[in-house]
Image (cartoon, rainbow, N blue to C red; front, top):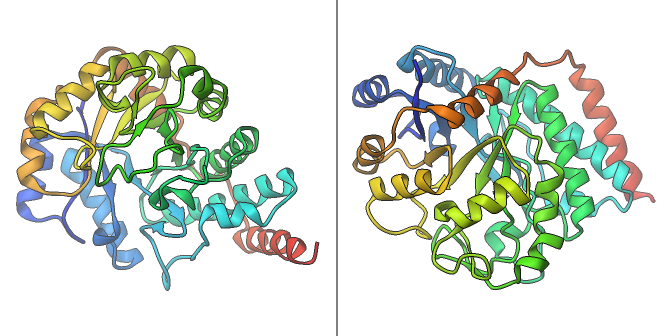
Length: 337
């Protein structure tokens, strides 16, 4: 039976009886975890097991584990990483950078799969600008579209080698936003032609990947009335011009870039062409109307969801000590270059 077209968060480190009943009855397609859900590896593995047991299937469990500020798994139990932009700036050689980032995310994937997490919301394909908002800026890989595409491919391959599905974000490109979409609705006035030639390019290059997350950003030269998440016009751009035919999920419906009742936000996103909506904060007062508004996955959206999960493989065998040593050697080489 098809699941409902929504990904939900939960409130704490274990499921409450109310959450268990809600997830069992509403059957979301997947779940997403945050720092509030994490104490230690044993607890986290038990939580991911209980989420899947609630819906009676091997539902995808997502996280944002980019490294740097956006990392839900932290020390001492998990590796700490510097922000992606700082990492990338160590390397003037694109091949060395790509190899280092592939190793970084292969190591991350090993940690994620060990606690039952099989989808990571990375790579970040937004092109950084001088004026990019600080909430995004050091999570990017750089300003060069070819370099970002190569780096993003390496990130995705490292994750998939470790049995973790990547999610490209924030489509079609959020680097030109000078506001934080968690708090405000950014408006980008760059022309469609310029966006096509720059910001859209990394997403075109990685359009074969199975999952993507939309941007809560208005691109006023294309659709001045709605952010990409809620814009049928932007959906056509993402599907036809960028060429992405995988599963398109929204960014978090709770972000203040969006307004209005939560059920209507969900309805509008699906009507615009998103396949699945994402609601992260675990607040039942918001989750209930979202669940009431979203249908079961069907048609092309169901096909995309199934196609994404079909790529979820067991991790390839890895010698993690050797991978760490290679990563450290690459970093050391840049220090003395």
